[in-house]
Image 1: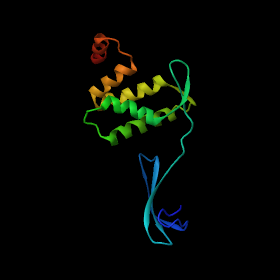
Image 2 (image 1 turned 120 degrees about the horizontal axis):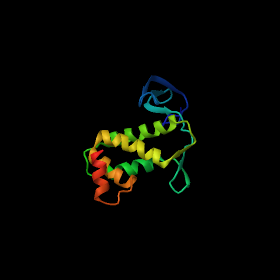
Image 3 (image 1 turned 180 degrees about the vertical axis):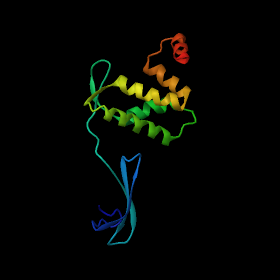
Image 4 (image 1 turned 90 degrees about the vertical axis):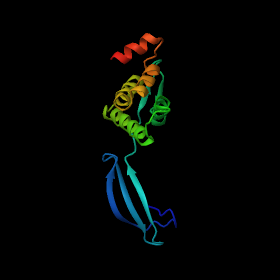
Length: 146
């Protein structure tokens, strides 16, 4: 690992531990040349997931797009960015566990809805109104009753 301070490749690992439910390895390192310490994170490079949209188009899975959708739903709600990031990571892991190269946008939407319902009912309803394409107040009423 190259030192970010002096660019030397001579570094030593002082400590290693897993984070993010074992998905990432955090390593504390020390440069053998300049003596400065720094932290690195190792994560398995994701496999290519393709999302099949309602109209049949395919596009690469983009967790930032999932995050933007959640951010719109949680706007002005007491939900931390850390929790939002956890939801996005959890959705991505669920999609990867399906072991398919293509997943439907509906599967992603259902996974987000499931998590938002546990976290914040208002955010869940906002997300559901877009994802489930509510057309009138009756659609909202039906969703609230479920």
